Amino acid sequence: MYKIRRFWLLLKRKLKIFDLIPKITDIRENPEISLNNIIMSILLMPFYELKSLLGLDRLSRKKKFKGLFDCRRKMVASDSTISRVLHWMDPNEIIDFQQGLLPLYRDEQLQRIQIDDEPGYRTIGIIDGSCMSNHYLSAFVLSGKTEYPLVIENCEKRGKELPVSKVLLDKAQMLLGDNFPQLLLYDALYFNENSFKRTREKGAHILIKCKEPEFREVLKNARFIFDAKDEVTDKIQTAKGFDSKRMCRWEMKITSGDFAGYPIQIAHLIEDYPLEKEDKSHIECWIVTTDFSLKPNEIREIAHRRWHIENNVFKRLSHLVGTKTFYFKNPVPFFNLIRLLCLALAVYDILIYSLQSSPKYFKKILNGIKPTWKNIFSQLDELLFDGIFYIEPIEI
Image (cartoon, rainbow, N blue to C red):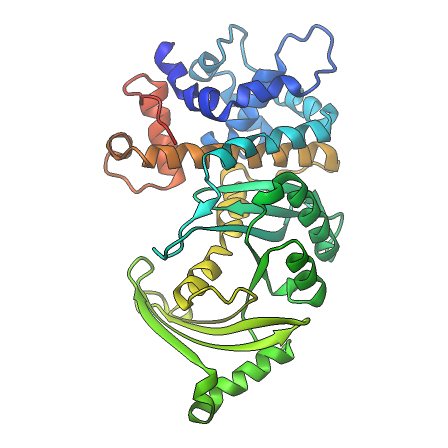
């Protein structure tokens, strides 16, 4: 039992998740199952790739799983019990719980990131929307050393992403204050005057990545300049290189322009991936930013980072816990669940980052396999919970 509990050390001492749960009101009288255990069970769903509450029900009957909670009942909590709890929990308290990692995230400077070995650090936020189980949502994600989905809002229906983005920005600024990101990343949907104005009024720069230039006059003008070649070389900056991590050659042309009253850099990026299939071997995109301090390699790297909200949050939720098909007709239990799962993603991201900061232990945990989330969780499940091997407390 002692070795099993070692798994919780990071959560207790650094992330202090257990300290935050008692702030969630339990409306039940004399409950047999503690709210602490129910919430922690939900937070373990990504770890075990449980794509339904029924899957969690099956696992909660296992001796190994019950051992995590010192549970002497036949199970930790049934799927029906967890569903009822998700229906009556106060969404505002769940939001506070989800955002409870923020002091740690700030104190440990997890938001600060160095781009492509350039001097200095940047702080980055990403805004995007998704549809899960017939529910539309928008998210504000801090993207630094780890990803932290900080604000999740209900869009009610498709097409409401733009007005909801204002709510996301206002709530994020209220939470972050002086730590509000220096740079916010968007997709082409947010290439409009209001998004530029709101972002710049918050004191942040904006970076937008899009595929085609036709829908904005300023991009068409930039394409004309790039096509003119020798006649306007004084208006074009060029850069090229080879990305050994992604195994691609890249070339970028940059000029300047003006949009919504703000001066902008406009970049046309071409990437060639010789090892990919033909339809993915040649990629072009357009990148617009109000930040003139960004160098070409930084523009490219940060534009790639915009996909972190898709790959490291939305797709990860779908892959690990089946949120695309996890159906709650009522938005209250659905968003309670999504916010808890987003907190779990942030917790495990920090856990993996902390393990990577101790190469000796991380190498021993991986045991030669590729360091994907699924592989890491599989190894931790065997090595930690079965008591074969455990890690010492690791400083972030």
